[in-house]
Structure formats: C-alpha cells, structure tokens
Image (cartoon, rainbow, N blue to C red):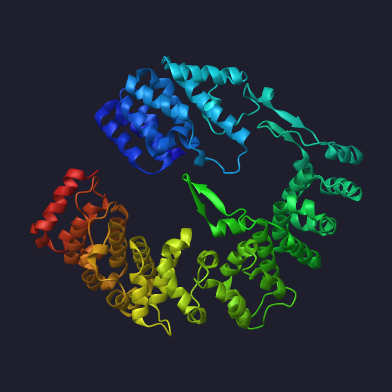
Length: 640
C-alpha cells in the first residue's frame, strides 16, 4: 500500500509541474491489465484538467463496463463521479447512464445467487452509482432520474453515507469512530454451563456486518466449558451445526488442536451423518490439523476419514473459481480447500508420521483407502487424487507395485479430466526422480501436447521438462526431448529459457562445467532453431544465462546471440552484469551484449554507466567504437 501511495504522490507532484506528462502517465496506467493501475488511472481522472470526460467514460465502459462495476475500482469510480461528473458532455453522460441502467454483468457474481438476492444486488449497485452522479450536481437524464426515484421508493432505508463508507468494499470502524458503537451488535455467550447450553439452542441470528458473538472466544479460552455444553446437547440429540462449525475452527488453531482432539474426538465420532455433511469442511479441517502431530485416537481419525469419504458430495463442488471475470478450474486450490482433500492430506500426514522407507509398502490400514481414492468412477474423489499426485514420488518409492497399478494410470491423457487433475497435483511441487521419469515416460512426453490443459501449473511443466532434458536422463533420446520442447507454445519456451538461466545460476562454482556439459548440449541439440520464436522475455533469460556463464561468457554469448534483442526492462540484467566484473574480463563481448539488449528504452539503467566505464578503462580503443558511442549518447539522453 505504501508503494501505491508513493506512486500516487509522485504523480501528483508531476501533475503540478507538467500536466501534459501527467496525462500521458495516467493514460499509460489504464492500458496496463492490472486493477491497481486502473485505480491509479481513475484517481488521476478525478483530478481537474487531467483526463477528458469522453475518455474516462470510455475507460469505464471497456470490457463490458467491468471497471464501472468492479469492487476493486469502486472508490475511485465514485470519487470520479463526485468530482468530475458535472463536467460530462451530453453524449458521454448518455452512454454512462445507459451502462448504469443496464446493471452489472451477471458473470461478475456467483452462479448460485438466489434470484431475490441478485435483484437486490443489481438494484443496490445501480442506485448507488446514480445517487453519486446526482450528488455531483449533474442533472440526470430522464430515464436515469426515473430509475433512481423508483429504486429509492422501493428501498427507502438506502441513504448515502455521510462518511463515504459506501464507496468502499470493506469498512472498518474502531471504538473511537462515531459510527462504531451505533452499529455494533454483540451477543455475549453465558459463562455458566446450563445457561450456555440454553444459549446454544437459540436460533443463530442473521449475521449482519456488525453482528458478532463471543462463542468462538469461549471455544478458544474455555475449551472444557464449550465442549461440555456441546456434549450435553449431543446427549439430547441436539447438534447445532453453526456452533459446532465455529468450535471446530477454533479448536483447529495452533496450540489447541491436540488437546481438543484428545477430548472431543470421541464425541465427534458420534456425530450424525447429516450434521457431519453440513459442517464437513470444518470437521475435516480440524482432522487435517490434528493429523500433523496426532498422538492418540488414530482409529477414530481413520473411522472419520472413511465416513467423510462415504458422504454424497457433489462431484464438482469446490472446483471452480471466478478470476478476472472468467470461470476457471484449479484442481490444486480446489483439492486443498475441499473436505475430500482435507481427508486425503490427513491420511498422507498419518502415513508420513510412520517415517516410511523405500520399498516397505503401504500400511495395511491405509492402502485400501488410498486404493478407493484412485477409483476414477468416483468423480468426487478427484480432489483426493490431486493430492495423491502431489506425493507421487513418495508413493512410487515406498510401494512401486501399488503405484504402478493404481496411481500412475491416472497420468494417462486417455482420460483428460483425470490427467489434468493429477498432473497439476504433481506439478504443484515437482522433483526429478529418474526411475519415475522412466516409468511414466509416454505420459510425460505427451503432456507437452497438453500444455494449455495444465492450467496454472503449465509453467512448472516447462521448467520440469527443461530440467529433465538437461539430463542425463536414461532411456530418453535427444530427439524425444527436442520434439517435446518443440511442441511448447511461445509462453512455454519463455519458461524453458528462464529455467535454463536459473539452472546455470544455481550451479555456483561449477557454472563453466555445467555450461559445457549440460546447457550447451541442450542448446545445440534440443532448443528450437527458428528465430521467429524469439521474444524479449526469452532474450532477458538468455542474457542472464550469458552472465551466469562467467568464464564461458564469450562462448555462451556466441551461442545465443541470434536470439537476443532489446529487453523491455534491462535494469536487473545490467545490475547483474555490472556486479559480475565481466565488463573488465571480456570488454569486447560485454559491449556486444550491451549493444544488443539496449535499444532506445525510455529509461537508461544506472548501471549502464558503470559497465561502459569498465569497458573503456580496460580497452580504451573501444571508446571510438560506434556501438560504444551510441550507448554513451543514449545514456546521456535517457539517464537519470
């Protein structure tokens, strides 16, 4: 936040002295695809004389008016309305009001919203924006004014906040704020056992933004008090789900989990299936937390795991997320946040507590459950299979026959949905293990054709493939790796180039040997030959590769030179070059590298001067070189 405020304040200083430059900066901000810069641009538009009204209305209506309705830009949009709406030209006002009357895009919100809730949300969103426009002093058009009056009559309780709290997606009031005490509604849980039992049976009131009670604090600070009250209710077959949910969440916290498991596990074991399913997320979260350091009641943990796995969860529940307005499927995030995933991780933790060794096979009490999780006929277990995939090497080393029979077949792309899930689980934190690479060689190589299907973990696949190709990898031919790398899209090649530079940088004192024995053969025999695939990002990674080669700097530069081009942001690579001392060791080659990656970028890196000085001090005649003179002139014009 402090960096954003610093950037804002710097822009205000520029605006005070050079309004034309400030306008250009603000316009460039909105072109960036990040909400933070959209906010900064809209803030700039709210300042007098910066952005024409036609342009900021265009901004709000881009991407199907996404930024008009997004909570991420709400504060800036409302300030823009208040401060600048009265300056709107007629055509811009008509377009803006028409967009507001249309309402927010449905795909900005969850699919499962009740129709009444959706109608209220639309009405509130439209009302708030029209009310802010009206407050600015702008006379609303006839349709907008009529709609504002209609909504205001339907919801007379809606009033604009005097402290602008309605312009924020979140608002926190402290005890010293004037609106705090009036809004706060605290329900204090009784301290006596019988009174607490009666209190727990009361219906939970609607949880408004300022409602709170002290039940969770009771669960944290008076464990036996909370447990005995719940136990009394359970003896009468009363299981208040909301109260159990909060209790388990509190008991799962560090420092409380083992004690709560010791005394509460036998009671939770008797919980009816209907209640268990309703609060499954909290129960399994508690179970997973317990499994990391469990010291008793392992039989209860296993029994609860079996019961949860038998519950009729929906196959796709918890699998889909809205990101930047687009529905996406992230198997890993889904798995680690789903009860099936919690149970699977608890079982894995229980297994790892036994310190398994290579080839000792899976424990008899766990193997049947892991086998059940591998049943592809049960879609709801896919969350568990993701986490099994994340531990593939451990399963392979401890029980190779079981892994080859049940787990490895899931990596076959003959079933794309299953393969995507387990591959993303494996790529969550992949490691090279040669026997495994050999065992799933066809599935591994085929994954290069499925790059786009690997979702958020496709970059890890490119890096993993690159490290495997750097070898040595038995039973893989060079042309097989060449074919796999060649199938990667441009984005994948960019990740591969980055992995190459990181591998050489990680070789430390062995960098020269690593270049000659691993990276150079990869570059000559596996890397694609078409220069049409070159990009500035690949150029940046290869520049770092050249610098990392140290004593092999000249040969590495010669090998990759045709792939180099001006880098958009060269500051860091020039810092690396200046720190490396290579400009003094190899001044001619360093000048060639600088001339290749430095074009006419807006700002000259500070370290460029140091690099040029080192070059000319070592080889004075290079000061007459046309490349040196171009770079010196560029530094003079663009330097800071």
